[in-house]
Length: 254
Image 1: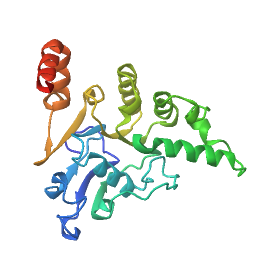
Image 2: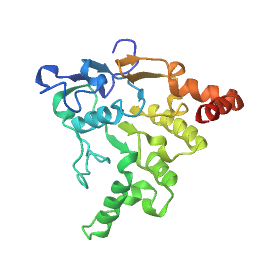
Image 3: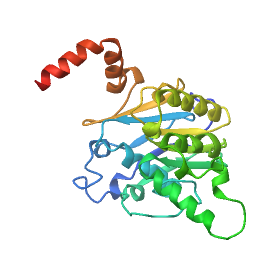
């Protein structure tokens, strides 16, 4: 377990480089993958950070699918597909699992959460017996809530603890206040023996203190402190020097 006080559910991810068909084709041409060998995961929270186009979602998707989650999100029991668009990366990675096995798990993907909500409504409309799936999300159709409310309903009601939770840009519909509430929810679930792997642009969500962060750049992947990311630095500069930054931005436009 090394420096950590518990064994992660998933310890690391290895790219099987000898099996990659070509590093000149998608998704292996991405800088983050061209140099990737192994990523170690924190037993509590691991962040995957970077600008758009660097491969954050592609990497997170591959980890989730390799674990057994549906590419469009949900728990291990979901198998719907609205559009087969996921990459083949999951076929070329190996997940090194810990000794323990999680009792819960969820792949949250903001981009396809609407499709997940639709699938839940469809399944609950079919008379197959048993309880309603939506009751595990607070009892109210996710389509009858705002995006932020429906996102948080999954975090609050569906995530039960002792689980592996893989989240792709969960802040997409959350206000700053809700993002702070999300941090508190992550902490509560970590105390219930949960592990998170999170892709995010939010400096607030990056703020969990006991975590590991990877930064995807045109030069590859580097381990980084949150305070060193462009996301944190630019947001801090804007909040502290808004007038000066706006003046420079508008001058550039003119």
